Image 1: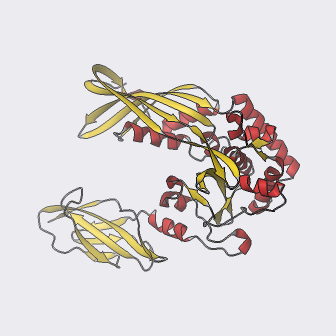
Image 2 (image 1 turned 90 degrees about the vertical axis):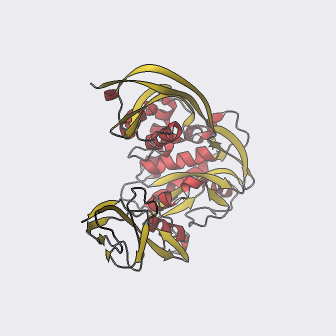
Length: 412
């Protein structure tokens, strides 16, 4: 057990992530979805501390531990983790993203994320530098408040299994048919909660047992039911008609499509038919939050360009760009002045940077379409750092991949 005694500056910071319920208009209906303002109050202290580093795990392991506790609706949780991230806020956000990532369980991922009504993390941290590398040891004491109780969550699990059985959904069915049957069930049975009396209307529980919900409850129920029958799905927050709103994307074949069961429940009950079922990436009047439309998200959840009903199967422009942008090139070998690159794709241009500075300050560059390149003007008895990335014009826009990892070479 390793103990390190140091004098440090301990930052005690209370980071409140308050989920506010905001009434908005979606089409002609009132909508609600939670938003996440961040507030920070900082005080600095200096003290003597002994740190038992063996009690601190990676962010991934910490999230795995806490996920089990959140699934049981624990209201007070302590967790310790270590990371190279110096910003407490960024470290917590990474932990939270790992905590609520998509897993094989229908009770985790988006379902867990949108059932947390409020969380208040208090923490201290200690930076320790060894061999010129600083590790940050964080200890969080988190207070959680949930929209539902554990008993209510279990009732939802039981009821959904019963509904799925009554709908006759089997493993052999196509994703399309599973989605259609669940979509029709929700549209038929759930009504919009125009004047919600409490926060329960934000939940799948309210949609199932009270037959009323706002968009968050509709989308959460859609998510939960589809995950139960192994259909890939996400809950997407954003804006519709300029107001806060939530809907889903679902996977049919190779691509994802937009579905808005909240709006279509109103259409169905008024006899208008579906207008928001399996729509392509250009989803009229719907605009995602930024972190649901960046290249990382689109690379993982590729959207169809056209509506499913058209029969046209093609990636959307943003999805094509995203799949290229998230690629991580790899240098195969650097020998003296010659660099061998891993081929990314046909008809791309490579930008090779090389510098004597590790951070590539004042780096020289070579533009090429070849994967074997000799670097010019290298000085003898010097160490160089080399990296590269690829670029390609996709639907009229130049898109670049990430930079490769850097390689070192010493010129004799």
